Amino acid sequence: MQALSPSTPNNLKSLVRPAPARAWMGGRAVRCAFRSDPVYFPNGVGHSHADWQSSCAILSSKVLSLEQPAGKSGHPDRVADRVDPNLVPIETKDSPAPSVPAPAPQTPKPISLFKITPVPVHDSQLRVAYQGVPGAYAEAAAEKAYPNFEAIPCDQLEAALQAVELRIADRAVLPVENSLVGSTPGNYDLLLRHRLHVVGEVQMPVHHCLLALPGTRLKCLSRVISHPQALWQCEHTIRRLAPQATREAVNDTAGAAEFIAENGLQHVAAIASARTAELYGLQVLANGIQDDCSNMTRFLMLAREPIIPRTGRPSKSSIMFAPIEGEGAAVLFKVLPAFAFRNINLTKIESRPHWKRPIRLVDDANGRTVKHFEYMFHLDFQASMAEVRAQNALTEVQEYTSFLRVLGSYPMDMTPWSPPPPMSSVDSD
Ligand SMILES: O=C(O)C(=O)Cc1ccccc1
Image 1 (tube, helix red, strand yellow):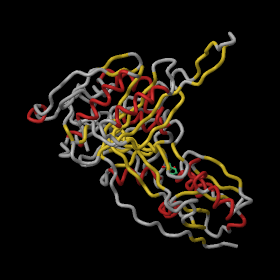
Image 2 (cartoon, rainbow, N blue to C red):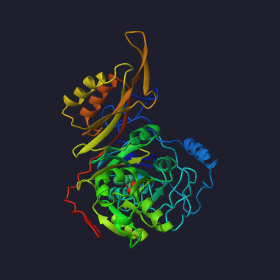
Image 3 (spheres, protein in one colour):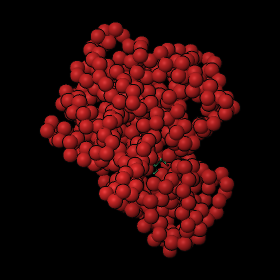
Image 4 (cartoon, rainbow, N blue to C red):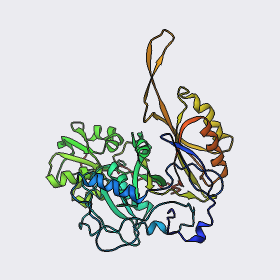
């Protein structure tokens, strides 16, 4: 699933009938091109070369190296230029990319915001950035979406998103929600702060294990470390298996396992995948420790350019909008019928603190000034922006909102569900 870039052949460009649409992002109207009727893709024009250079300059001031690549030259988006028959081509004004990064270390080391090192580009591989070290669930999600991918591990989500913006990676993986604990706080807000588009979703069954140095006994554990989501997802089981252990949150599940292995930490366990145990030489103390066996996490795939999935196959679109000031939740009475009357299913709706103005001061009837929370709304619906009904729904939504952004339109993950194995542990005393 790739967007087309400036190197798209002209015969494909002719499929596109640009029609101007306006969407608001930070008070700025943005035009974008699409197939038939208006689609609202803020910043749908991609990055200019000048943007790339200035971003590099900002980063390299803190850094060690952000060298221009030696070796292969060419467009790093080569893979992304190939045409996916499931997509409607989109014209972009993306400028020529910088030349390609140079050789990388043998084992992928996480990219940090302060240390961006060049990585190699292989013709047939999409470079996918994710938070964590090898073995993280986000890496497995990347593999499901792009089986031939090249992993770009990053120490923070912010670094993964920046890696795509800076063309060090082609995609970033963003965990957004879990069937047990709900949305991952802040991750949709992260999308608002970056000029990336959702181009795919992956739903992954998450089967957690408790990992420790070989020979560790459950009853001797003093500490369990993992990603906060993993700790929440296993809260009850951990309390039962190792009630004496304290919990500690770290950046990612596999990073927790690596930390135990590298430092030879006794009496400490990590919550991570079974594959992670193999990668870092740890023992699986218990398998399937998530509190609900149908535990599932949803990841979004982000790219510099938007895609528009063809009609006729199951697709989703994600938007965020803010009410006109003072209208608050009343906006939902107007927005929801725009979808309902067009038979568009909503799959998710959520309120978030307004990213720029979370609190509003209001004078009450007694002349006192009180604080009101201001919200934005995030909504997923089951239609592609290639569909006229989706375009019309958004035209209507736009009338009731002060801010509307299409985060992306993407094929739905239709993987059939298969039952997970039951929990087991080596040492239940
Ligand atoms: O830390 C990881 O491995 C991640 O990819 C984030 C995460 C954590 C817990 C469940 C799903 C994803």
